[in-house]
Image 1 (cartoon, rainbow, N blue to C red):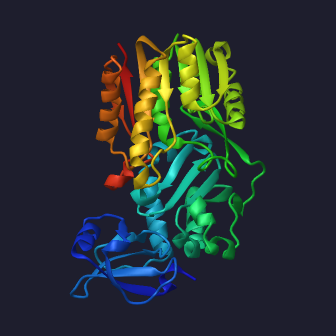
Image 2 (tube, rainbow, N blue to C red):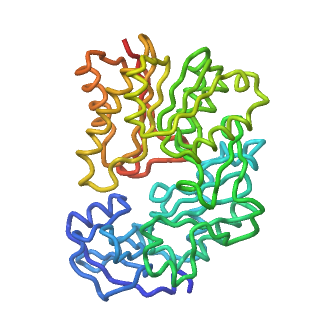
Length: 410
C-alpha cells in the first residue's frame, strides 16, 4: 500500500504542541495530543489540524511510542507518496555533495539520511562503498519501507541494501509480521557481510549485517582526523575503541604507540584487522599497538596503578542516557571518566572526551568535564569544541547529540 493510501487520522494538539509543530519540531509526544479521530495503526498517516480545522502537519502515527507522531511535513497540505520520499532523499543527497561528488565516491562511507535531521524521523541510511544500510528506529516505518527503500536504492545506485532494526523495532510484532529480520539483504546481492570502505583516505571494514548500529560509527569522522593530526610521535590511549576508528587514525598520524581498550574481544580483533588494512603505510606499520580487553573504568584504574601515562587520551563512550531517568547516572559516568583519564595523561597532554547522549546538553557536558578536572586539581584548558560531521546535520535541538572536546592537561 502506498503511503498516501494509508488510513488518515485527524489529530488535534494542545496549544503548545501545535506551536512546536508549526515551529518545525519533528516530534509530537503523547501528552500533546488532545484528540484522535480513530484508534489508528502503526504507520498510518496522522494529519494535525488546528482548532479551525486548518491543516498544520502530517506524520507517521506510532501508538507504541511516547513520540506518538513523527512529523514528515508541516505547512500546507501535500501528498505523502513516492514523489515525497524521492524529494526528501534527493535533498539529503544534495547536502552531502562533498561525498557524492568525490572522485572516490564509490569507496566512501557516509550517512545518506540522518532521521529527523533530514525530514525522515526514525530512519537512518548509511552508505559503505556500494552497500546501503537502512536502519529503522520506529515500527511506523514498516508499512512504507518497500517504497522508501526503492527510492534510496535508485537515488544512490548501490548494489545492495541491508535492513537493520533497533531492538525496540525488532520486539514489535509488526517486524515479524512483515517478514523482517535484522541484517536481511532486501535489495540486490551481498557477497560478504563485511564491506570495505574509505574514511579520510584510510581503509576500514564494516560488518553491515551484524555490527553495532550500521557497522561503523560515521559521526566521529572529523574528530578522528583531528586526532590523526595531533598524534605524531605520541603515545595514545583509545578508550571505548569500538572497531578502531581513532586507533587507526592515530597510527596513520605517526603515533609512537596506541593502546586500544574495549570490553569486547571480537571488537578488538576488528581493530587489529583495520590496522592491518592500512599496513602499507609506514606510519601504521611502525606504530606499536596493544589491545586491552576489559571494562573501561577498571582498565583506566589499572593503568594508573601501574604508573602508565599517555600523551593523548581519547574517551568516546556509548550513550549513557537512553532514557531521561538515566541522566544522573550518565553525568556521574562522565565525571568518573574525566577523573580516571586525568590520572593517565602526561603533563601537557591532550584529552579528547566525547558524549553521544542527546539528553545531556553540550553545555552541561563541558561543564561536567571542566568541574571534575578542577576538583581533581588539574584544570583543563579547552582548545577545541566540536560536534557533528557534515553528513550528520542538525535540524532540531535534540538532533545535536554528539559533542566532543579537545583539552590540554597541565
